[in-house]
Structure formats: structure tokens, C-alpha cells
Length: 228
Image (cartoon, rainbow, N blue to C red; front, side):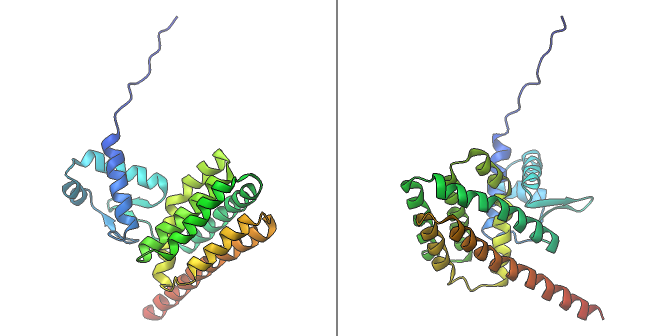
């Protein structure tokens, strides 16, 4: 009988911490979409070697918020029109299931958490805090669905949705309507009317999608005029 062994696990705690720090820097605007993430500068800023930096950037690339280019290094993603369309359609499919599951399965305490998350939007002090509160609201909706694999699917795109919302706010700084919209979404879940809730969530997503696609169209037309 052939003896088999498994490769000893490597401790990746430091790389995880670096990934958390870089992700946070992307989400708070330190590194904007398109910004280069230089290994040497990150290693110096975080006081670590380049090994954990390289591992952390690979992890963030798997999350979809960093991309690497041959001989150019790593960059924060800039969402293309195709990225926006794909992310919106996938998010919509997951969110409709989450809403219907939450209507059917959420406890009152789950819906209290959704309502509390909606109120946090009104207290957000800046656009980046607004996006964090927006993501936290959707976290609460997925938790209320009480569907473990669905929540895991949300976690797989969560960071990309965060960048999606940051990009949206960059194109449309008026976020005064967001607290009211999220309160309405929370109330729809509380009312246990699945069709109405699904419709309101779809309308909410559609506004962000329109802002992003209109912004991309305007940017493309501007670039074309400059090249003429």
C-alpha cells in the first residue's frame, strides 16, 4: 500500500491582513479605480515584505477588485460597460431570490436588522460611508434570507458591488434619496409582499445601473471628440 501525505498548510495570516488593508484603502478612496498598486510602496507602507503583498494582491484579484497586467503590475479595477452589465444582471438574479426568501423565511429580528441598516444610511457622513452603509443594508437582506449558499454567492461578488457603488457615486454625487429608498425597501420586506418588494429592489438597482451606463456613454463620446 502506497503511503500518501498532504502538503503542510502555510500560515497566510499576514497576507490576509495585507489584503484587508489594501481592500480598505480601495473602499475608502485612497486608491481610486484605475490606480496602480505598487508592491514596493505597499510593502513600505504596511511594513511587510513583498511576499505577503503579492499573495494579498492575488487574493484581491480573485475577488475581482484588482487586475494585473503583464509587465505593468496590479491596478484597482475600472468597470467597463460589459462589467457593469454582467455584475448588474448577476446581482439582480441573486437579489430577487434573497428578497423572496427573506419575505418567506425572515424572523422579525432579521427585518429589524434590515430596517436598522437602512437608518444607518441617513447618518453616513460622506460618500464612502454611504456606500459602506448601502452594502451593510444588502448584507442584512441576504442574512434575512436564511439561505447559506445564497449568502456565499453574495459574498463572492460583494467587493465588486462595492466598487460598482463607489463608481456610481463618483458619477452622481447626489445621494440624498438613498435613505428614503432603503427605508421603503425595508418596509416592503416587513410587509411580506414578495412581488412588490422584488419590484422596488429592481427599481433601486435600475437607477444605479442607468447612472453608470450613462456615465460610460458620456465618457466614451468625450474621448471620441478629443481624438477627432
